[in-house]
Length: 404
Length: 126
Image 1 (cartoon, rainbow over the protein chains, first blue to last red):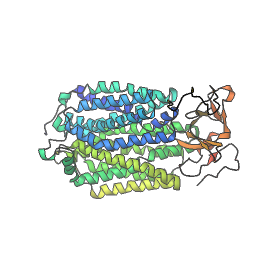
Image 2 (cartoon, rainbow over the protein chains, first blue to last red; image 1 turned 60 degrees about the vertical axis):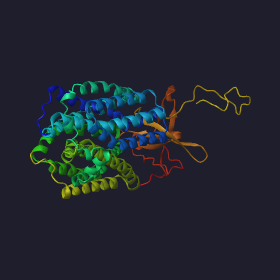
Image 3 (cartoon, chains in turn orange, yellow; image 1 turned 135 degrees about the vertical axis):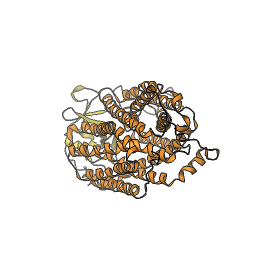
């Protein structure tokens, strides 16, 4: 299992560009979908319902998707099917904006997205092996962040200058370069056992026994708790800050919100590979603590700054957390789950916990902001983040393998 | 929507049927601000207890759906088809006031922004 794997240049660059193009096929499905549906004369109740259906489908598919990636032989085929499904979803939403079609497309897209996260990490692990994983995940995060940033700028421009509908046609179109990049990865170079995080024995195969095995690991609980608290504090921050900018920045508000979305991604693209190397040299724990330590500071600063340029400056701190966690989340899961053969099930488990946390905290923070004001909302988010930092400081072990 | 209970050929018309090509949904219509700038999109229409249309709920600002605010703009301050352009809707309220308008929250009293403050305007909640 510990043999050094030597992937070809072709496979390496294929994975680079595959992670890059994923931003383009996923951005349109974010908050933008409600903007589009309004232009299709949907009412607010239907929009809310279809968003909830998508969110629920996403939560429910995380664990089965992880288990599926562990069970299959070709991660590449799974990823290809998922990309195709997302392309079809985007096309259906663009040409047939009626309730049933959009709801079905959202469900399909949610399931496919739940598959893509684990599939990319699994391909990475299967391609380079465990020793080179930190560097590879750093590279993944670089290309993913660059792709997300470029996609936000492109899709925003597309929605502004063409139409909201055009965004979904463009999204569907980007499935083609994503697939082209994916098929540059040689399937034969992806070691299946390594991609699944080792080989599981007979008694622990399947979802149930696999979950039992994973849930006995204390470090997984602590890590999940820390990441859940991080997500609860982090997810509502950008929308709240964006709303503040809309209130205070006048005519430049739209551009400033765009900068708040794109620039942290650029920062993450710049620093992620460095984070990958640091994870190997100084270990995982200090980096995790840095990412979680920055968040309460960001929340506090948001609570007290009021000028538009200071709001944008504070949002840049998001780049620090993003560059660390983009690498560290899959890496620490691999550390903890390696040897069980359930690496991707573990990713699905964390994915579901994180998704649930994000869904709850978005409405909770919205409620606090409406009742007690933005100041109180930012303070409570900072408090939540501080709890996450404390939890990891006190209980999170170093998970870097001792043999380095 | 197929009508199973009898189409137009049915013997007794229940009400006068008026046909117009100039009726259109306001949902999704873009608002033009005081100096022609983008002032968001109409996402809902609010009526009072008598069925009188009071306000349009407008999704204002934001990028890719992030950072936008839902605000209520007084219906009487919207001008439809200004300058003879049939599809446009204009609002005369300055953008600073639109940007700082309180958000519309389900289940709570609605604060309506208007050019003048009519008697039924509710003070913005703090």
